[in-house]
Length: 98
Image (cartoon, rainbow, N blue to C red; front, side):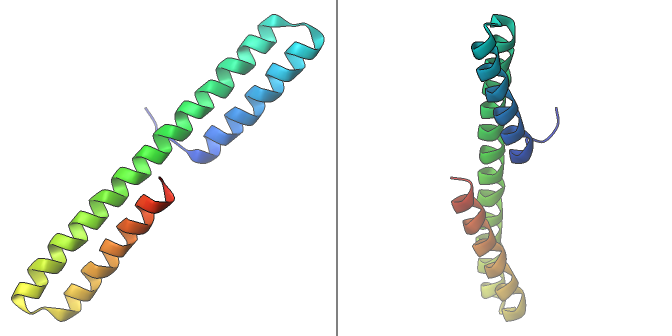
């Protein structure tokens, strides 16, 4: 399975909704059903992409915090700053994906 993509998800939602509306307008139940299916698949993919991004953010946040604590204990201040950046990046990723 490929990595979930917000872009592909939004595309599927848009195209699916268009098919659904056109199918409804012209009385084509098959096209309407295919549109609903595609739109729903897009919603599922978007949720998966958000979850994936949130988890990656949590991993970055925790990893940065742990590395920062280790660097603080050893007195490595330059590496400690880099770890803080990674931790903040993780926080931003989590915020963006929630």
